[in-house]
Image (cartoon, rainbow, N blue to C red; front, side, top):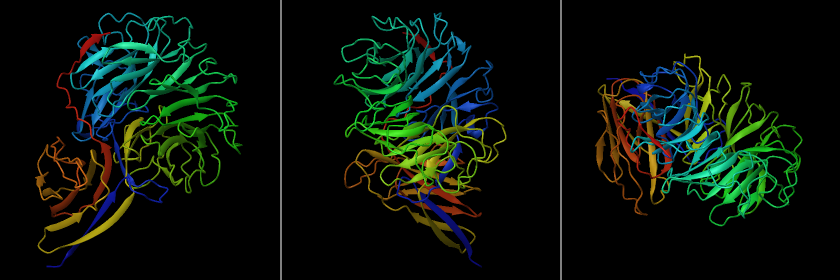
Length: 557
């Protein structure tokens, strides 16, 4: 019998690459169960992905994601990339929300979700008539209104890695004692104590003399950055502009980071800060033209501030020099090594000719820039990717963004904004096998990478066509079948000897399978197949099960 040649593509993510067009896998996250597309707009915020890339949270106006959705407002959904299930969480025992819920964020471990809602029926006795910040626990299925007692609007929540600290902004005057500034302030809610404290004060506790917005919080919840028009939070703030303020809750330190390397104040406003998970770096966008040399483009730029060295660096710079359009809404990896941002500039990387807003990534270690708003084939988006910002998890491995583009995934026909998840894949190798008897057996060895103790490593597998038998073999020889539904395994590197401990997770039987371990893969099939693999690194956290109650219990704080 004539040999039939089979070709496989092995793609390893989170390794070095020189490509300016991001290789990877782009999937749509704003979908109903098993991938059915939404029938209206969906958007993601800037903390929309769990650390392992499994869960993506988003807001949507669609009424076909949940069959009981009849409220015609924006609701909050959590999509499980592995189980292919989507759950609406902006509901309570009182019914579905009667007004918009937006600005959803998720903790690194995927357990806690915070969001803003104008609904008055998600908690009993909500009569303040303004937006509130809610916290949903996916383990307990309890939905808590954190700001129900507030006499002003609360919004823009962000979460610590474990979701036990929630930072947000509010115009309420009664969430903290002595709040008489009649301005938006930054507050911190501690889940363990159910206490709210005001953050936007000076080191002596004196309240801000102007408004503060858009907070961001470090993984351990001890460091916060926010945007502020106040002039009295830090000494010698004389520029009368919105600055980026850093607060260390452990030491009480306050510092303005939107300054030049010699401490000169910015000559224009700065916005939308994001602090790294480590709490050692801050990124933001700015209209200032004096923060670094040779800023002559007249557009907003994205800048990086190192809290250890007190040095500031412009990140929005490309092959063609300064960007020829605004660069805004940055996000940053836990280590501060990778920065994402959005821009309509067409001179940041070569070949950017789609004339729309794209998502870009900068690697600070080597200056490499990539466009992330692309299809799995590498084709650039045919419509702008913007609105509420982009989100990054597990260093550069996962990026979520919103776009009305119709060419990022197959069969995108809803004519709406969707939320997409791009999984970074940076190195590729091709394997060829021969078919002797009509069934091909391909043995693919994923190369060993440097594994860190206590880290989880993920392998994502996609295929076209039907696979009639599929099995994974761990490098220590333990085999786990994945040919039937709801099987997969995980490992965590326990020590330098790389002892692998499998953990079973529920997955869908077809489509994209995500298995989290280093593997030797054996595939038996009869039809032509195309395979893509992405090896990703994520911090180990307990993975919460999808709660069974359809109506979360409403709790009032």
